[in-house]
Each structure stands twice: as C-alpha cells, then as structure tokens.
Image (cartoon, rainbow, N blue to C red; front, side, top):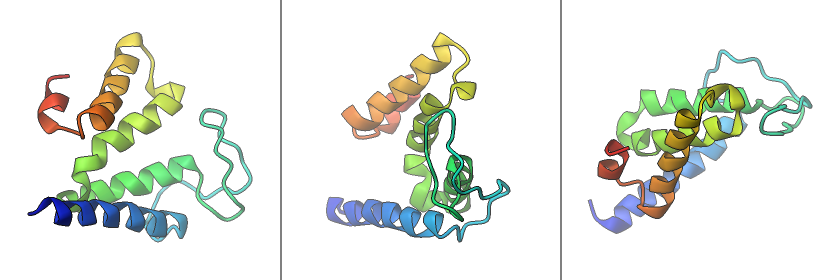
Length: 118
C-alpha cells in the first residue's frame, strides 16, 4: 500500500466516524441524551445527539468490528477519552501511560513499535 493510499484510508476513517457517530448509525448501549453537559469533558451534545459516552462506545465498536481499517487509531481514541474523564485515570501511572500514548500518536506518527515499548 502506498503512502497516498494509506493517507486516503485514514481520511476515510475520520470522515466515516463523523458521519456514522453523529447520525448514531452505529449501535450503542449507552442512551442518547441531548442538552446534558458531561461533567468531565464538558461536551454539550445537541438535543437528540449522542453524549460523549455513546460516541466512545460507537467508536470502539467500529474498531472491533472492522479492525483492519480502524485498529491503528484505537489506542489514540482510548487515550484521548481517558485523559478527559477522571474515572479512567485513577493513578499517576495510568495518567502517564495515556499521555505517553498520545505523545507517540502525535510525535511518532502512531508508531506501533514505540507504543509497545510503553
């Protein structure tokens, strides 16, 4: 696969997330709540739109349903959600692991070898 094809695949990934998650076409067990602000990340969904937990569930479900297309970004999604919600960061070690995962994603182009060394 060429780098151009890989770039198009990643762009398609983010476009499909926007389309599927905001229309809530991916099944989720988390109820949809509109107008309720998340006390952790301060997200305010529009009425009838999924809250942050529902978006997380839908995104992670896609990662597991189609791992060939989406697994490369799974760790990034998990780390991002976790650093915004304190219930997932209960210790300094946990916070450091999630922040290091984000650093690898942004500074080392999500290099799987670097992630394994964490």
